[in-house]
Image 1 (cartoon, helix red, strand yellow):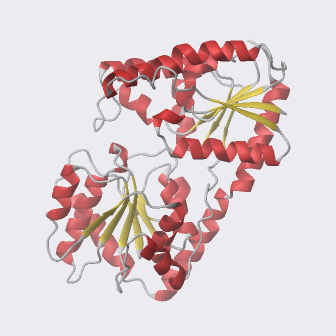
Image 2 (tube, one colour):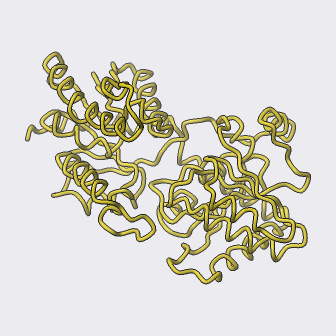
Amino acid sequence: MQVVLFGHPDFLNSRSMPRFVEMILRGMQTRGHTVQLWSPSPLLYRLPFGKRLKKWLGYLDQFVVFPLQVRSRLKKLPAQTLFIFGDQALGPWVPLVANRPHVIHVHDLMALCSALGEFVQNPTGWSGQQYQSMIRRGFGYGQTFISVSEKTRSDLHRFLPGKPRISEVIYNGLNFPFRRMSQTEYLSTLAVAGLTVPTSGFLLHVGGNQWYKNREGLLKIYAAYAQQTPNPLPLWMVGALPTDAMKAEAQGVKNNGKVQFSANLTDEQVCAAYSAARLLIFPSLAEGFGWPIAEAMACGCPVLTTGEAPMTEVGGEAAFYIPRQPDHDNGAWAMQASKQIIDILKLPMNEQLARQESGFKQVSKFDTNNTIAAYEKIYLQAIEDHQPC
């Protein structure tokens, strides 16, 4: 099988999507397939202009220059070449190969939902609405889709102009070998990052500052927990550096509560944090999949997350659940969640171990080799079943 894999341009400085595309590239090459990676180069973006103008020059590289390059390259490829889009956000390029075998990976449609006014927490301006409309029109030409969760597939089908020829759900595979580290290993690994694990342990959150990660809601939960606990465990927030609002919220925590922010940790160090933590708290408002839930369970860390799809798909019966934070919360939601944290931390050892084993069993669904094998099956089917438009 000859494959062309479309990925986001490097100059966007994304982390998760390049890792996902790299996983596909390595997986298909390991299985003997020939894979080329195509993405825009920063031809105009590298010109010495200010940040605001560079953004628009980047758009020109992606949606004017790159399509011209693709049309030229297509003339040299065999008719049965398979084109794989690593993300539905690359939709504007789909029409270029809509008449050839192709597969579109769909991660989440939160940006599109926001542009349509479905998330009041994330209003979208006019230009953002037009951009999402362009993405939607583009992936609307698609015939074969792989979604990361049932929730994502359900959203996808709402936005397609018709029923796709193939639309399957294949759960993400972990793109790093997260595992339960020994105490000696996680202590030494975190020490390299300048982190010292408290004797009593700590609570953990892993994620960025995107609105749907709900870090502000997490800090409200932690403040409520600290109020009710004589000696509250510290909260480690691993991921992006905090906003000023988050810093202020963290500094306002009473009763010896302490919030520690850590950025730029390696995957190995994040694995160590999961292994050392007493509980991962992941109160997202929405997700496409929810990587930290699976990562934490792979490391033997219990998980408290939002009781809605796709978090429930990833956590299964192994995770603990809280309601989604309401749009207008008077503090009752945070108080309820904080009480659940206290109850989880008080569980007897046999119940903790049983929940940990349940997590190991649940996370086996997200084996990377199985994921790649499932992708390959759909890829081959897309070539076999392809019907030119």
